[in-house]
Image (cartoon, rainbow, N blue to C red; front, side, top):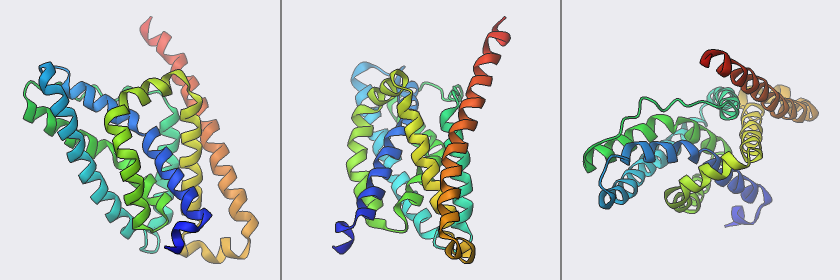
Length: 230
Protein backbone atom coordinates (compact mmCIF):
# COMPACT_ATOMS: atom_id res chain seq x y z
CA UNK A 1 0.00 0.00 0.00
CA UNK A 2 2.97 2.32 0.45
CA UNK A 3 3.30 2.44 -3.34
CA UNK A 4 -0.14 4.09 -3.63
CA UNK A 5 1.02 7.06 -1.52
CA UNK A 6 4.04 7.99 -3.65
CA UNK A 7 4.07 10.82 -6.23
CA UNK A 8 5.83 8.45 -8.65
CA UNK A 9 2.81 6.11 -8.58
CA UNK A 10 0.28 8.84 -9.36
CA UNK A 11 2.42 10.44 -12.08
CA UNK A 12 2.93 7.02 -13.71
CA UNK A 13 -0.82 6.27 -13.47
CA UNK A 14 -1.66 9.62 -15.06
CA UNK A 15 0.82 8.88 -17.87
CA UNK A 16 -0.80 5.48 -18.51
CA UNK A 17 -4.30 6.99 -18.66
CA UNK A 18 -3.20 9.76 -21.06
CA UNK A 19 -1.33 7.23 -23.23
CA UNK A 20 -4.43 4.99 -23.38
CA UNK A 21 -6.68 7.89 -24.34
CA UNK A 22 -4.35 9.43 -26.94
CA UNK A 23 -3.79 6.06 -28.61
CA UNK A 24 -7.53 5.28 -28.52
CA UNK A 25 -7.96 6.99 -31.90
CA UNK A 26 -6.95 3.82 -33.75
CA UNK A 27 -9.37 1.88 -31.56
CA UNK A 28 -12.25 4.13 -32.69
CA UNK A 29 -11.34 3.74 -36.38
CA UNK A 30 -11.07 -0.06 -36.14
CA UNK A 31 -14.44 -0.35 -34.41
CA UNK A 32 -16.19 2.00 -36.80
CA UNK A 33 -14.86 0.38 -39.98
CA UNK A 34 -15.43 -3.21 -38.84
CA UNK A 35 -19.03 -2.68 -37.68
CA UNK A 36 -20.33 -0.16 -40.22
CA UNK A 37 -22.05 -2.75 -42.48
CA UNK A 38 -23.92 -4.46 -39.64
CA UNK A 39 -27.60 -3.84 -38.85
CA UNK A 40 -28.05 -1.16 -36.17
CA UNK A 41 -29.11 -3.68 -33.48
CA UNK A 42 -25.92 -5.71 -34.01
CA UNK A 43 -23.46 -2.82 -34.15
CA UNK A 44 -23.61 -2.25 -30.39
CA UNK A 45 -22.98 -5.96 -29.69
CA UNK A 46 -20.02 -6.00 -32.10
CA UNK A 47 -18.52 -2.88 -30.47
CA UNK A 48 -18.91 -4.22 -26.90
CA UNK A 49 -17.76 -7.82 -27.44
CA UNK A 50 -15.05 -6.91 -29.95
CA UNK A 51 -13.61 -4.29 -27.61
CA UNK A 52 -13.82 -6.60 -24.58
CA UNK A 53 -11.92 -9.31 -26.45
CA UNK A 54 -9.31 -6.82 -27.66
CA UNK A 55 -8.84 -5.34 -24.17
CA UNK A 56 -8.36 -8.79 -22.57
CA UNK A 57 -5.65 -9.68 -25.10
CA UNK A 58 -4.06 -6.23 -24.74
CA UNK A 59 -4.03 -6.51 -20.92
CA UNK A 60 -2.35 -9.93 -21.03
CA UNK A 61 0.17 -8.69 -23.60
CA UNK A 62 0.96 -5.61 -21.49
CA UNK A 63 1.54 -7.69 -18.36
CA UNK A 64 3.82 -9.98 -20.39
CA UNK A 65 5.79 -7.00 -21.73
CA UNK A 66 6.11 -5.54 -18.19
CA UNK A 67 7.79 -8.80 -17.20
CA UNK A 68 9.94 -8.93 -20.36
CA UNK A 69 11.21 -5.37 -19.83
CA UNK A 70 12.90 -6.56 -16.63
CA UNK A 71 15.34 -8.57 -18.79
CA UNK A 72 18.59 -6.56 -19.21
CA UNK A 73 18.75 -4.77 -22.55
CA UNK A 74 15.05 -4.97 -23.43
CA UNK A 75 14.09 -1.83 -21.50
CA UNK A 76 16.46 0.23 -23.66
CA UNK A 77 15.21 -1.43 -26.85
CA UNK A 78 11.61 -0.77 -25.79
CA UNK A 79 12.50 2.89 -25.21
CA UNK A 80 13.94 3.23 -28.71
CA UNK A 81 10.82 1.63 -30.22
CA UNK A 82 8.65 4.02 -28.22
CA UNK A 83 10.57 7.02 -29.59
CA UNK A 84 9.59 5.89 -33.10
CA UNK A 85 5.96 5.39 -31.94
CA UNK A 86 5.96 8.94 -30.48
CA UNK A 87 7.02 10.41 -33.83
CA UNK A 88 4.47 8.25 -35.68
CA UNK A 89 1.69 9.61 -33.45
CA UNK A 90 2.39 13.14 -34.71
CA UNK A 91 2.28 12.15 -38.39
CA UNK A 92 -1.11 12.15 -40.12
CA UNK A 93 -1.64 8.71 -41.60
CA UNK A 94 -4.72 6.89 -42.82
CA UNK A 95 -3.25 3.41 -42.62
CA UNK A 96 -6.55 1.67 -42.02
CA UNK A 97 -7.59 0.95 -45.61
CA UNK A 98 -6.95 -2.76 -45.14
CA UNK A 99 -9.65 -3.05 -42.44
CA UNK A 100 -12.74 -4.33 -44.22
CA UNK A 101 -16.30 -3.91 -43.02
CA UNK A 102 -17.82 -7.22 -41.94
CA UNK A 103 -21.27 -8.48 -42.87
CA UNK A 104 -21.85 -10.73 -39.83
CA UNK A 105 -21.67 -10.14 -36.07
CA UNK A 106 -19.07 -12.85 -35.48
CA UNK A 107 -16.85 -11.64 -38.32
CA UNK A 108 -17.05 -8.04 -37.07
CA UNK A 109 -16.07 -9.06 -33.52
CA UNK A 110 -13.16 -11.13 -34.88
CA UNK A 111 -12.00 -8.23 -37.10
CA UNK A 112 -12.05 -5.80 -34.16
CA UNK A 113 -10.11 -8.18 -31.89
CA UNK A 114 -7.44 -9.09 -34.47
CA UNK A 115 -6.97 -5.57 -35.86
CA UNK A 116 -6.82 -3.97 -32.41
CA UNK A 117 -4.33 -6.61 -31.23
CA UNK A 118 -2.03 -5.98 -34.20
CA UNK A 119 -2.37 -2.21 -34.05
CA UNK A 120 -2.21 -2.10 -30.23
CA UNK A 121 1.52 -2.87 -30.03
CA UNK A 122 2.31 0.81 -29.52
CA UNK A 123 -0.12 0.98 -26.60
CA UNK A 124 1.29 -2.18 -25.02
CA UNK A 125 4.91 -0.97 -25.13
CA UNK A 126 3.99 2.54 -23.95
CA UNK A 127 1.88 1.41 -20.99
CA UNK A 128 4.41 -1.25 -19.98
CA UNK A 129 7.19 1.36 -20.03
CA UNK A 130 5.17 3.89 -18.02
CA UNK A 131 4.30 1.22 -15.42
CA UNK A 132 7.98 0.89 -14.36
CA UNK A 133 7.55 -2.81 -13.61
CA UNK A 134 4.43 -2.44 -11.44
CA UNK A 135 1.63 -4.80 -12.54
CA UNK A 136 -0.81 -2.97 -10.22
CA UNK A 137 -0.37 0.20 -12.27
CA UNK A 138 -1.28 -1.62 -15.48
CA UNK A 139 -4.44 -3.09 -13.92
CA UNK A 140 -5.62 0.19 -12.35
CA UNK A 141 -4.85 2.10 -15.56
CA UNK A 142 -6.93 -0.36 -17.60
CA UNK A 143 -9.84 -0.27 -15.12
CA UNK A 144 -9.98 3.53 -15.42
CA UNK A 145 -9.32 3.92 -19.14
CA UNK A 146 -11.16 0.93 -20.65
CA UNK A 147 -14.72 2.25 -20.01
CA UNK A 148 -13.67 5.58 -21.52
CA UNK A 149 -12.17 3.85 -24.58
CA UNK A 150 -15.22 1.59 -25.10
CA UNK A 151 -17.92 4.24 -24.85
CA UNK A 152 -15.98 7.37 -25.76
CA UNK A 153 -13.44 6.31 -28.39
CA UNK A 154 -15.22 8.16 -31.22
CA UNK A 155 -15.60 11.26 -29.03
CA UNK A 156 -11.87 11.11 -28.18
CA UNK A 157 -11.02 10.90 -31.89
CA UNK A 158 -13.15 13.98 -32.70
CA UNK A 159 -11.68 15.85 -29.72
CA UNK A 160 -8.13 15.18 -30.93
CA UNK A 161 -9.03 16.30 -34.47
CA UNK A 162 -10.46 19.55 -33.10
CA UNK A 163 -7.62 20.20 -30.65
CA UNK A 164 -4.34 18.93 -32.21
CA UNK A 165 -2.43 20.13 -29.12
CA UNK A 166 -3.80 17.07 -27.30
CA UNK A 167 -1.91 14.80 -29.71
CA UNK A 168 1.27 16.84 -29.19
CA UNK A 169 0.93 16.52 -25.41
CA UNK A 170 0.36 12.78 -25.77
CA UNK A 171 3.43 12.43 -28.01
CA UNK A 172 5.48 14.40 -25.46
CA UNK A 173 4.38 12.03 -22.67
CA UNK A 174 5.25 9.03 -24.84
CA UNK A 175 8.66 10.56 -25.61
CA UNK A 176 9.26 11.27 -21.91
CA UNK A 177 8.36 7.66 -21.09
CA UNK A 178 10.71 6.46 -23.86
CA UNK A 179 13.56 8.62 -22.55
CA UNK A 180 13.07 7.27 -19.02
CA UNK A 181 13.03 3.70 -20.32
CA UNK A 182 16.40 4.22 -22.01
CA UNK A 183 17.99 6.01 -19.02
CA UNK A 184 16.62 3.38 -16.60
CA UNK A 185 18.14 0.55 -18.64
CA UNK A 186 20.36 -1.45 -16.18
CA UNK A 187 23.09 -1.88 -18.81
CA UNK A 188 23.38 1.93 -19.10
CA UNK A 189 23.31 2.54 -15.33
CA UNK A 190 27.11 3.09 -15.09
CA UNK A 191 26.80 6.03 -17.49
CA UNK A 192 23.53 7.69 -16.49
CA UNK A 193 24.04 6.84 -12.81
CA UNK A 194 27.43 8.57 -12.72
CA UNK A 195 26.12 11.69 -14.45
CA UNK A 196 22.50 12.33 -13.33
CA UNK A 197 22.33 15.62 -15.25
CA UNK A 198 23.04 13.75 -18.50
CA UNK A 199 19.91 11.64 -17.84
CA UNK A 200 17.64 14.69 -17.83
CA UNK A 201 19.41 16.35 -20.75
CA UNK A 202 18.83 13.13 -22.73
CA UNK A 203 15.13 12.94 -21.75
CA UNK A 204 14.52 16.60 -22.65
CA UNK A 205 16.39 16.12 -25.95
CA UNK A 206 14.20 13.10 -26.78
CA UNK A 207 10.97 15.01 -26.05
CA UNK A 208 12.00 18.11 -28.03
CA UNK A 209 13.47 15.99 -30.85
CA UNK A 210 10.30 13.88 -31.20
CA UNK A 211 8.03 16.94 -31.41
CA UNK A 212 10.29 18.70 -33.94
CA UNK A 213 10.80 15.63 -36.15
CA UNK A 214 7.09 14.77 -36.00
CA UNK A 215 6.05 18.28 -37.04
CA UNK A 216 8.63 18.48 -39.85
CA UNK A 217 7.55 15.10 -41.26
CA UNK A 218 3.89 16.05 -40.93
CA UNK A 219 4.42 19.32 -42.82
CA UNK A 220 6.32 17.53 -45.61
CA UNK A 221 3.53 14.96 -45.88
CA UNK A 222 0.88 17.70 -46.15
CA UNK A 223 2.90 19.43 -48.87
CA UNK A 224 3.08 16.19 -50.87
CA UNK A 225 -0.70 15.60 -50.80
CA UNK A 226 -1.69 18.53 -53.10
CA UNK A 227 1.06 17.54 -55.56
CA UNK A 228 -0.14 13.91 -55.64
CA UNK A 229 -3.78 14.96 -56.11
CA UNK A 230 -2.91 17.23 -59.04
